[in-house]
Length: 274
Length: 239
Image (cartoon, rainbow over the protein chains, first blue to last red):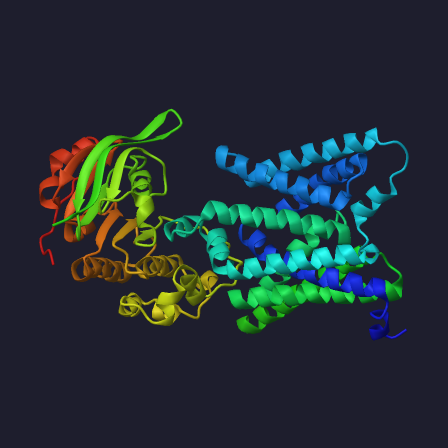
């Protein structure tokens, strides 16, 4: 089967659309996560969302949306505690995500029998995305990307120099909450595609790779999106032909991309020294 | 001359500890005011509160309005700005984040970038700059929108001698020509004497307040720094 033919398959079309939109959204958010040095935030939110998934399964709700609500609540709590205590973000993430994960384990324990759905959230399954889910993921991701583009300068300055953002008269509280909520939503939607364990890779790796090879902020943003697209597209194709798990393959392609970027940046530095 | 800053019974505390204790002073518009005092005396804290970046008790008015209502008209240069050195962002992009409009139509202060040596750094990445060059960029950023009031926290730290001279001349220029009120924290008495029109001596409380030739004397400096402080001798030749 040729590469293009696999995208004639409806499940691959759904996976591709949902994957590309979400990959782009996570790559955009990854820039701010990288500037604010809060890489752990995405990982923490993904793990914390497990409790939401467990509550959803227990109460018979759609687990994904229960997880979105749960992660948004955790993100807002994190913001509140950041403001009201002197504890660092990393410490707070460590506290909240382990507590939420522990709650998830207890809730799972309350449910009788084997939970196949739960396992799919741990490692994700992009190929199982339904048409409805693909539409909702695309609409939400597109909406958030438009909002992030419109607020790009403000968010960038807020991430880089919050004091200056305040002096410029930006609504820093609203912007920060918007960033945290966007992260929570994007990470949990990413859980559906690549799972709790791997989602933070889509958030961190494209921006980190782009940092290595970019020579401007504009370039960083552009390259981060390109690397995310490459990871999702090449990962999906490779997983189909190699019969590997799709989420893990996407993450590995992203990692290979990072290694190439690193090698490229080293070569460039050596040339400059010569 | 109208009043740029009116501080009344201002107290700033971190938990139980007061860092600035019930101080009151006025600063006239267009002045260059210097806040001096030993390490840990509350200078930076006071400066940040005046700029509206810290909560406080009492009242602070900038041009008869609370600092929060003057946002967009305040320039601020921090003592140090920690930025991720791996971030690829050019000087121009960094400045555009604060003021895209000013950059596209070249604002009134554009000539000052050239004098300060920032114009030639526009395409450089921030991570390629030395500490002194970065400090100049921060000062340039603070001037971008022609602020009514400029807060500088040891603005010359890390800048070489000739760069310092240029920096203070620029500060004097914006004060005189554009009537920008400048409030700076400084440890350098020579600079304070040459460029400031008002000096505030702070050590938790306001210990002196007045023109440099009245305030920078043996008695008030001993009161501020203690008996062991190095004696300041002013060399005449004020510009």
